[in-house]
Length: 192
Image (cartoon, rainbow, N blue to C red; front, side):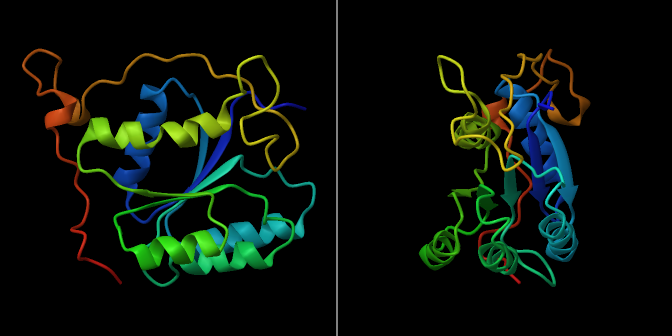
C-alpha cells in the first residue's frame, strides 16, 4: 500500500534543529511524516530492529547529525554500511562541521550527501532543497527522484502547505525578515 506522505527519519540531539527541518520542509512545499531519534544510541536500536524485520516500514530518507553524545553519526553510518538490508537507505548528513575530513569519512561510509548547517533561515531552508527533491517524483510521474524508497513504494507529490509563522510567535507586523534571523547552533569549534 503506497504511503500518503514520504517518511523522514531524523537523528539529532537538538530538538530545535528537528523543528527547523520540519519547518523547512513545509516552507519548500513538502509535507512529510517525521520519525525522530534524539541520539545515535536510539537510532541504532531503531535501525537494528528495521534490519531484523524485512516487512518493517523503512524511511524514504534519513537526516543524520554528526556530532552527538555517546554514539555519533559516523558510528550510525558504519552500522548502515555493514547492514545489507539498510545500505540502500539514503542518508543526508546535516551538521555544523565543515571539516573536509568529516565530509570524506561520511561519503566513504555511504552518505548520500553532506550539508553544513547554515546560520540564517533562508540559507538553511535552501540547503534542504536537494533533500526535498529526493522525496518528490520527477516531472512526468514515476517514483521519487532517487527511485522508489527503501520500502519499494513510490511516494506521492505532497500538496503545498501554508508558510509557517515566524519562529518565537512573533506577528508578521514588525517581525524581522527571515534572512535577518540567526539560528541557534553551536559554534563550529564545538565537538564531542
